[in-house]
Image (cartoon, rainbow, N blue to C red; front, top):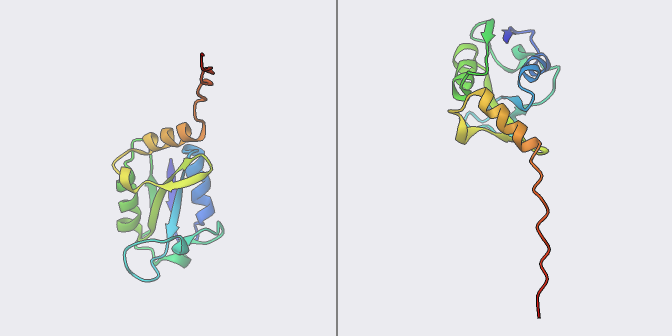
Length: 134
């Protein structure tokens, strides 16, 4: 998948393309309001119509190619170093979205599979009922 990153690109456009490829992942775009290098829920940009140029001074514009073999930490670093955008990858876990910080060395394909597994857990067979014998 190729993403076109420019000032007019919206978060929604990126989300749509990214989710077409990785159904159980999402990208969170952040603005580090307090410049502490950490991102909180209050710093996440959620509005899909938000243009990238309004949340960051893009260092450059251009295409970004992303594949299933892309490692999460490399993708997040590329967004930061190349474009000046702060991004976190999340994977689906039932009805929640979990940040991937402890597994940033996994590929997007690995995380997408994990999200798929968490969204559709295997149903365990009912345990056998046991009765006490006298």
